[in-house]
Length: 239
Image (cartoon, rainbow, N blue to C red; front, side):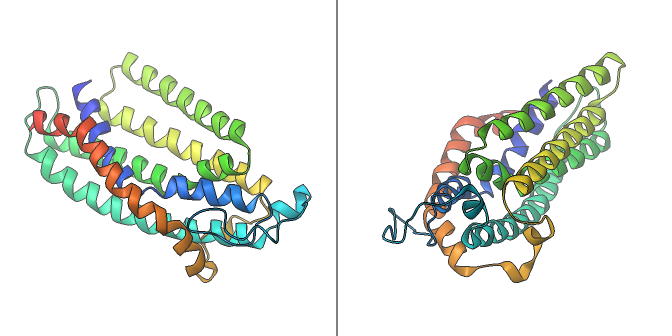
């Protein structure tokens, strides 16, 4: 239990790489779903061009599609940096501790699997914000519930059969992959964008990025402070 709590605490560092983009994505996706074509950094932006839109028009909105494509690229870059940091920091920190029931190598192997799950979770977390922004909160919740049930069942089976922390880390990774697969399917079904388009570098829009970054950078500092207050003590105490 102690090792798993430590994993969760260290894995929470991945969330800091999100820089507060989540709320900005939710906000801008909601804006585009009203028919807006601009991505204002603050306020409502241009409201003179608003008109009645059909459901089809909203989800075929080129601004929305450009926003999602840009967001996916930004999150992929953040995830790469997060993975490198977690692997390096986790190796240095976990190697310095002493364990009663596991070898350091076993802990590190389990940590690498857990870190990969945390990074996959980060890389596609914008999909939850997208589902919330387009009014499909129920689909986001369904994805979360399914993944959590799968993790709990897998973890219980692993513990009952005497498996170690590695098995639980694998269950964690599997549940995250399933979560994001459902997210991708639900977003693709509700927004007129192909899965391939989400990862096209040519689809990156600097205009969309500026709209996201304006408020996200302010939230980054808040997130770091909140993390240090809520979980920083666990890292220090174990050391």
